[in-house]
Length: 179
Image (cartoon, rainbow, N blue to C red; front, side, top):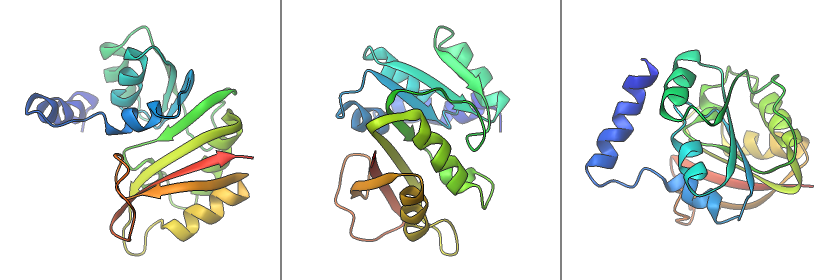
């Protein structure tokens, strides 16, 4: 699927009145000045954050997704890279992994992704990850263990990006702070 095709789904949802900016809205509640959109795809979250005056860097491994992001917002900082190994920079107030980033990383690299992303966030900064929970897939137990190994502490967990309480289910949004 091309980046344009992927983005068209969200454009259609937005045109129908669906709020497609839940991730950005949640990130904004932390009052960040600088955000890393880790696994930014076509830039939906980063562009919305920038629209609110937040400095954003978007990183993705897929050149087609980044091409769409660059077309939609040429003035933002878009970087091609594998989140497990890329130089992400430092000093971010928040890093967000939206859109099932941890599900789409190659199996076995999730801990490296979290460690690299955690390194990019300033001390006491936040890492927020939301993804689908599939039987036999990357789960919350592994997420929490990988986050702890990366120096992150769980602050809260929700069932949705609009902070509905998590009581089990097939989707979770987890917020961690960096020690």
